Length: 241
Length: 122
Image (spheres, each protein chain N blue to C red):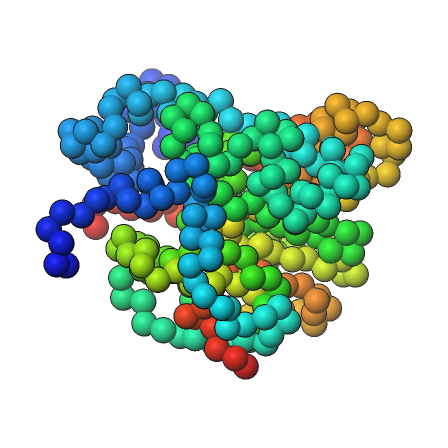
């Protein structure tokens, strides 16, 4: 796009729209929510408390689980065989979660911890929608929900991981976990070299959300997810068809 | 349906304090497949709702684990929780799913879950 067309006659960019477009799914959610409140299934106050609670969740408990598993072989065994039980030790109760004691933010309570080895790398996707282990990882990142990631990860896992900056040699097998039923997955990555003698706190710091989804591997000194550029669509969807 | 009053919260009540799929434990009877069995994914009709992805239909895989018992998603979508089934985690070689997957990465795989109705012995 040339600057000539994107600026108006005074040389300014046109003002951004005041209101973002509301998607069909957001309209649907509002309609169902309002119906449920009218029918008395829950109150608006319940909904507010629940939404606020869900947004307090984040990936720290899962990072702690990984750090503990690196340090304690017995705990690692428990994590790999019974993820729901192992979650209790990092403060996550999949079965009876606050504040309502009803359900969990994931609906389903079956966590499987996928253990990487130097020769096997796991990575998680939900091709069906965007199932995500929310009680232990919080809200999923935007890219995890995109059709692009969901379609391409099962088909071209090496290329997609390379786009995340993770290039794996041919002698490392990639194992994609597609979580489209009732199991939710997190990845237990290999403990990186250079972390010998580290404490649980130090180790937990390098286990980022991306490492837990499997699109990155932990590195000493790296404590944040890599920045991901957002590009505008080349051929944006045309509405009103 | 013969009953005029249907408790729409029955599923939630059953799962409270136990978890879902844990609340269906022991209800599916003996499993038909074992870990290591070679299975083929059936291509059943799915007019209304399914969680069985098209990319797995007709593919050959290996049972990696028996994961839990639960009503199949195709039933549960209609609030039918009467007949729980065994669920299996099945591993596919990428090459089996996508014939042009590069041979260099022949051991790359995908693992995902199916209810028993979708599997047949291969």
